[in-house]
Image 1: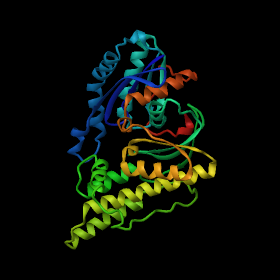
Image 2 (image 1 turned 30 degrees about the vertical axis):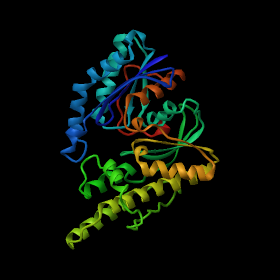
Image 3 (image 1 turned 45 degrees about the vertical axis):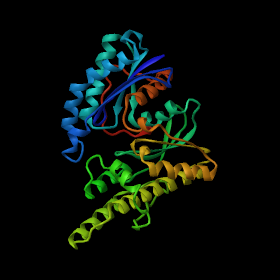
Image 4 (image 1 turned 180 degrees about the vertical axis):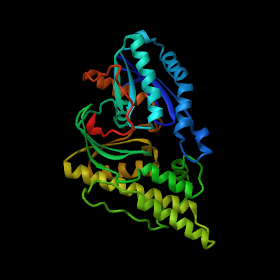
Length: 336
């Protein structure tokens, strides 16, 4: 079985061909980081325009590198939610046209489900059920993966996502966009005990997150220091920030696994590339006797392979769409 996956939910135009659910035949990603860097973040209108310019070439290259044609494919999978609506529409419209013109099934894929699926590409023997922490610039969720296509969200952020906290604090520290990787690099030379940062408490659900208070505390600290002419050690602050976010994510995930009786825990999303988060959750799982899974770093960011992988499982479970498929900016995992 060969599935083409198309991803355009934010600022990466990506396509991939995956064979038999878990073997990557090709993976092409065209990133817009350099263009958005001058604005300090993703500009939706620019992202949409670049997707329009790049998507044909990216898909063509993915097919060429996999040495397949449209006729060889069993289906075309595409991210339809959630994400930037203009960016999503480019991928969805292209995939619909490709499916209709080739007569291939169209397979809708939820972006977060795609991130979870990166673990299947890294670990051929991993099977549901298990618990997964999905952390990125737009999402921070603790999800029960009940089957390849059924999910239950048991914890989520009430405000900022973990990746957003990293990026906005990084910007306040003067690091270029995207800031998360610069915080990670600086943290390697810093002292994580140098700054005592808050661990926001959320009422109502013990597994929910909140990162806006932490972000505000860091930004206020930097502003106050600037007004007083005090220089803040960026390495130490980066290390303290990374340690705090890693601790919050890890503590909630381990508590959820213990409460629900899971022995398998996975990590996914853009923040899963962060060395502090990877180490903290890995060590905690080892301490509690849990099996731990996390994707290769090259699969942590947005890519087409994760969409093709999840699309393969959707296809096997009869989840397809017709020409009425539309892009959706916000959609809970439980509503797919």
